Image 1: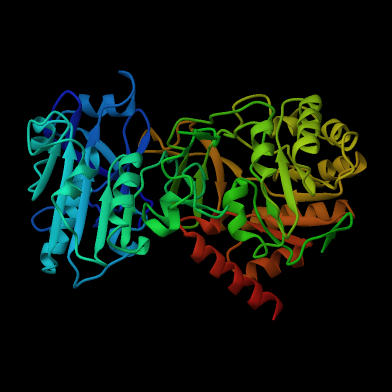
Image 2 (image 1 turned 180 degrees about the horizontal axis):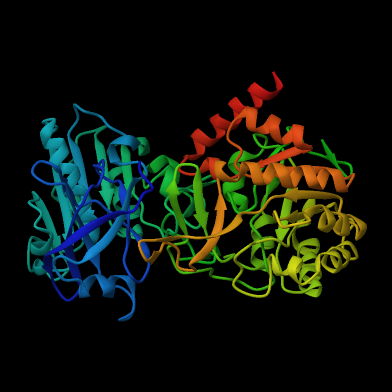
Length: 270
Length: 278
């Protein structure tokens, strides 16, 4: 882990009105799947999961961002970047999927929703290297969004039915019967993760279900405290250092899907 | 170690601004000798835009958070859900003595803590607060205002300003039961023409400021008889002993936790305690 901000040259790999895939070339340290980086542009600094990384011919990190906020927002600025522009990256930070739970000889069930798909695709690459079998279930709003992610998944759902099954990603459990006691990796919007984890729990113990939690973050090193998330007991984890990958038993019955933290640190109902 | 009858054992606590909230601090109940909350103001504050921290070197962390906090009422309401086995110290920040007093009233009504720490030293406040209290000569007034609204021990949190001993003396004369020092040291994080923090100026912490902290603690020790909580760059048992040698009765830790997950931080504190007291 390095806290130094690494200057990177940007390449826009793909973009829609809403989504952008950026490649950052620079002297970046390799991430484990599920780890994240802080990207700094002229607006502010924000966390992004690694969507892909390679250091074979050149060191490069890919991230996927969704446009949020107004024209002056951090992500709006990302959409204004041109090839060759500079951006700063520090990281990688946090605990990845396999730090939370790894079971090498079991089939890994990966469930991704929307922007949660790219970090799982990076995990899939790593699982393939170790020849760990996996079943990939993904859900998006429509075919265009799926094409943007470019995921090659066995089980697909879209909200408008333009690809795969019409519905949401948890509906795919109707098509898939996971092995008992298998391991799950889930990434997506918080409520989707809770719904998916509840389905997965019918097949395995919560300690075999790994969720990649996205929370508002300021520092990425555990100092700001604004990414706190309470577990079932009163005590809170800090997502940036204790996560972002958590097993479901640590979060079940806590703040996940119920409470969020405002930039002031105020804990409010979702 | 006792502050006006309040036992702090072991005499190791977190620096205000680290772990910050009741639910994070709950992890360290009994591991730290006292738990110190985030500086809380009367009204909710969102703090500065990111970037709010930057670490240009291992021994040097810069931050300018802008005192984000949910406001006294919301913070106290959350605190009221919790009970701790060690003292919980509420840290307050404000622009006027009246604001401090109003915050005290809120806490005494909703979630009375074991002690108060008065942050009159944040070096990069958004408003007319923090170190402005020292610059505007309001330290004694703030202390008296708080003491008039609570019988709990009051700790004055100071920065390494010139003549810190004199300011500590004024605080104690006004009723402060202990002094804690130092807050972060002001600095500007500029590199290759770019400001590394959104606020530009920030506070330096980490091992780089240990000599500054030691000097401040020594000056305070020479000026006042009340307990002194020393902090600034402490990482090892040897650092703690140096602070004790300079005159501290207790110590607080902050930047050392940078990047540590909860379990690692707890283990680190257990090891530190063992090394110091066994």
